[in-house]
Image (tube, rainbow, N blue to C red; front, side):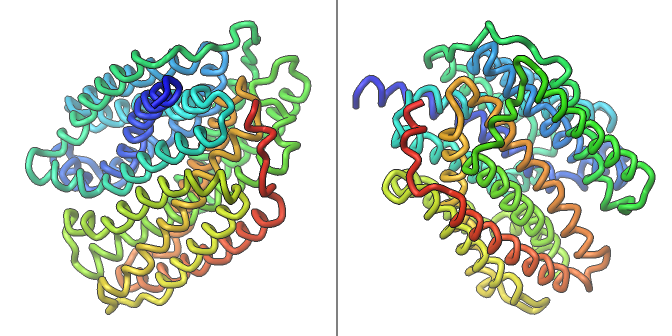
Length: 458
């Protein structure tokens, strides 16, 4: 291996550890909720905030942290995020009350927001304009996150069943230490310290995303016409309008409006929204379907998802070699069609369906996403210059987090509150997903370029 290849391998490993941690803590908590409720005397609404307190600051601070990484240096911000995440994990593990646990989860979300866009920026910088190296790095980075989020329920079930729910937070510590050790070994990613700080843009983006995610999260338990939901939605829209106005007039905007003049960037961002909305929303229903209709234990439900985990990892890595030869347009289009085919299979499930009937969908979903997501992420990086990689990654992942939260709210409403509605809700959610993914495939085929190699040299 050349020195560049060795350096790229170290950077990819360091960045992938952080991304895997971020994704693991999205899903590992769910199986521990009943035990937390028992130990901390938590209500159902309180348990919801154990989950949402992580998602809210995670999404709200992505743009800010991406911009900060571009200015101060991605490696510095990434290491700071690891430190915050480790400290917050200790706080969660030691939580004597529900309020303490919710506060710790919120701090975890801030650390996660610092790690995600900067980890992607580190991979982009290490590639040094080499499109094949970037595609391989992004593929391994994506695979690490995909495997982690799919493995979360299984790992959580094993830890809760053998050690206790506090272990799901303590398990983060060795990974944080290893991630920090790997990161210290990689080259510093220079920041553009001469760039001004767009304070108005920073605060508006945080308020806008906080209000938007809160409205989406609360729309399911409260209903869309609840005053809190409507108020948060109104604040999000108002701040969004002001944010656009401020960024257009700012000398050094945190989110350059010119990014959205590029069809490749816009298409990839919209694709990310659809993929997360459909996947997170349906997996939420599937977890209830497996446990409430089929009587699966948390550990067995986690094991049921193993085909998703394995397929994600294999196809993500294979996607790296396909991007350079086939281009993102083909992979995004084919990936969306495979994903849609997986949802067609899920739409055929009934309350009496066997696990073997579920398996085709469990294989097609990650096959489609495994092809499409690395191509989508690579397209976003190729559409911007290296100095804006952090904020571009922040935009992509803020949109994906918003899509995921919206998917859980939308599809959770379709599932209803009773077991008798779950199979019908799964069918309806799958049909909606098919329609959205077919539209995404059409947009990818129309607006993505087959080969945008000139941008890779940036």
